[in-house]
Amino acid sequence: MKVKKTSNKKYFFLLPLAFSGLAFLESVKPFILENSPKEIIDHVFNVVFREFVDPEGNFDKSKWWELRNKVLSKKNLGSQDPHNTIRQMLASLNDPYTRFLDPSEFNQIKIDLSGELIGVGIQIAIDSNDDLIVVSPIEGSPAIEEGIKPEDKIISIDNISTKGMNIEKAVQLIRGEKGTKVKLVISRNGIFLNKLLLRKTINIKSVSSKLNSTKNGYLVGYIRINKFGNKTSDELRKTLIDFENKNISGYVLDLRWNPGGSLNSSIEISRQFIDKGIIVSTLKKDGLKKIRKAKGVSLTKKPLIVLVNQGSASASEIVSGAIKDNNRGKLVGKKTFGKGLVQQMFPLRDGSAVTLTIAKYLTPNGTDINKFGITPDIEVKMNSKPILQREIGTRKDRQYRVGENELIKIIERNKLLSYFDPNASNLLAVLNNRNSSFVYSLN
Image (cartoon, rainbow, N blue to C red; front, side, top):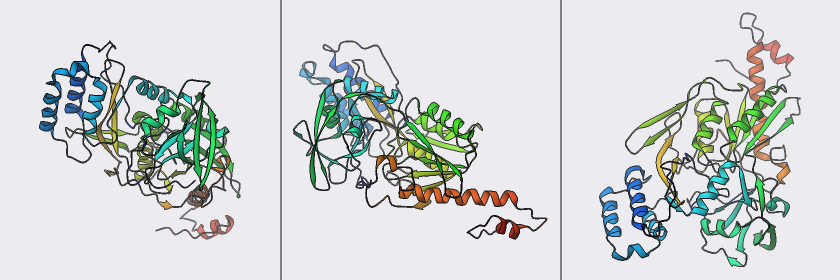
């Protein structure tokens, strides 16, 4: 399941599309814009002027306003499509996360966050070689049924070559009406395969889980979150309550290949594991820093391991950073993607929208991870040979196996500390009784 690094920072958007800090603001009643393209264009100019945060620090307000005046002064603007003009304007900002969404794209994102979509169920990205690749197929989807695997390279979509194709175009071609089919030609280890996938409604559960038993009898609650949508926090809450009633010894939270999603969702999920401390702080262009904290209402205090990799981005990094900086658990895997920026949706009057970078976020320790990512406490590579979907989160999964072993060590240490009576000096007896295989020193 090893995927080529995207650390060269090609645009990283997935199916379903997701943005950290997603919100729908400035919502207005749609109306036909055939006779007023300047109004929608000016709206976008003003939103960018007021809210945009340039991660590189190169945004020049005066030049932006000059561009506004130049565009709006064109006499033939009224006969042009305002959407193309807006795309060109936003492209000049050189921010891969700030972009225009036409009405169908905007509607699809809202559907994605609701947990239901029509499609074939693959998460895609552009790797460092400009190839369109599969990050992960969604469980229970047509992609799974047809044997699509992580790291498959998509060569063509309905006989249209993907060479030089951007994510938005690929999304448009792959998605379609329910009951129709899409043909993908993929390359896997140099072999070309034809896949015909039936588009259907996919109810996406963002949380999946299973109960694992270790060799020495501990019960481990394995929880995988594949995105941070509107229902994710509630799904996790039900899962944790169920596990807490089953004498769980600890948890492994899997955030690998999770591209992010809602900022609020990531905060609420962090609060289910963290009782006190800062979760995340966001820094806006005016210097205003908003700090989000835990509320003392965590659902579990049991030992925790978090699995991360280069596909863990955005909201995933908020949760990972909160757990790491608050010493609530340990991170195992590979360095995360490094997207420390917050986007916000600004709906426009014709049903389209602009997604705009409006802030950067910092981990509880004040670390800006944008472009750098979060380094795990224990670095572990994924299996050198691909494993089956059903083997993810089992001991055949190398990163999970290392995480489970570390979890057992933490559980054993906690038991030793609970048994140790310093007045009786009984540590040696405890170690002998527990048949411990490690040495633990009290400083």
